[in-house]
Length: 183
Image (cartoon, rainbow, N blue to C red; front, side, top):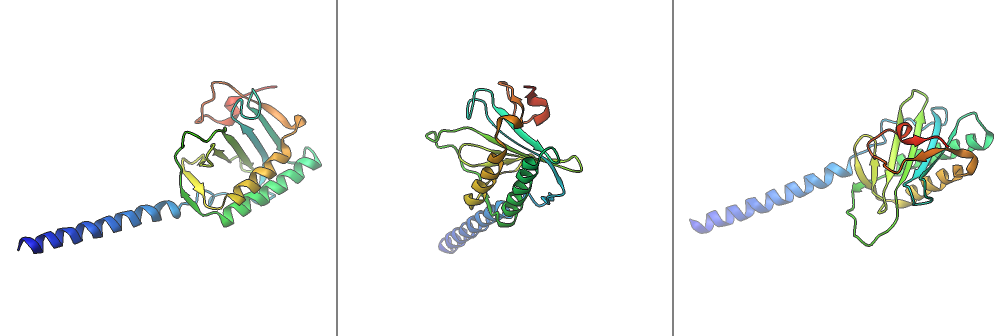
């Protein structure tokens, strides 16, 4: 009788372990924090990129362009809209990675402001974890799409596109307009 109970308990624990580990994996793989956004070229009115202070420069400069201000800005917004769309179509998200203590670097902030006034802010840390403004913390399985998005945003990193600086007492939970100090 003791042997049957031991076999039953072992089998039950094994089944529970397999079921719970599978459930946890499935929950973060199916997350899609980009599904509620329309990245069409007509819907995006402004884009911004910034980095944490002292990553690119001392002040954490915020670069941005608005639709209709210049032809180069409109071309950059078109390229960024296509990059967001590609990221959303091909993105397979996975669990966030912990810092290893060896990797160095800073944080990038990508922002997209839409015609209805809503916005999407994506924070990318030094190990490529992505933090969305809806609270999700994930990694993207294919980092090529993330690099493509970054390269499109880098098109607006020019002196004439500076819209402000991130204050040194930066809080990740505050809105970008609140943390900007005019140039």
